[in-house]
Length: 116
Image 1 (cartoon, rainbow, N blue to C red):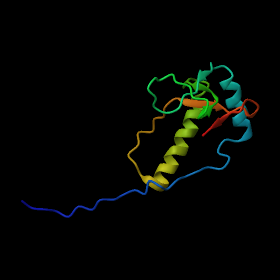
Image 2: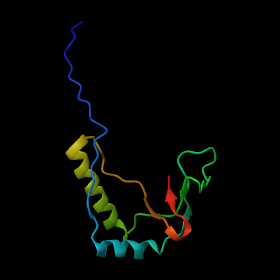
Image 3: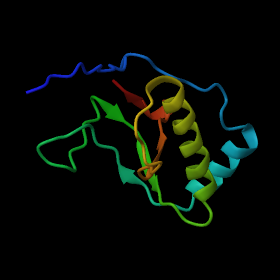
Image 4: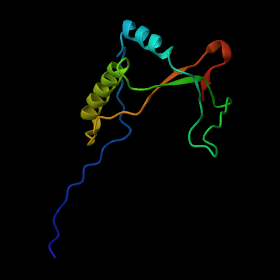
């Protein structure tokens, strides 16, 4: 049996990537307007024994799931572009370009909104 040298490339998973002001103020206003048309859902924390457990000691917020549709597709496209740029810059994963539903979250300071 012939043994070949195989070079394994390890990605530094502690690297991170961020954008400053990726969405401009007009885009953020439009996102808020679109989000107003979606229903609120309970904000849960990680995998729990019961999937609908709400733990306000850990997380106090209101969320909405922004489905991809004709009105929101531009948000998905912009986020996908950002993910692709970050991936190519640091990690180089074989990524198909899909995203999950967008979670729109509101942390209301006057109601003690937080995520510990």
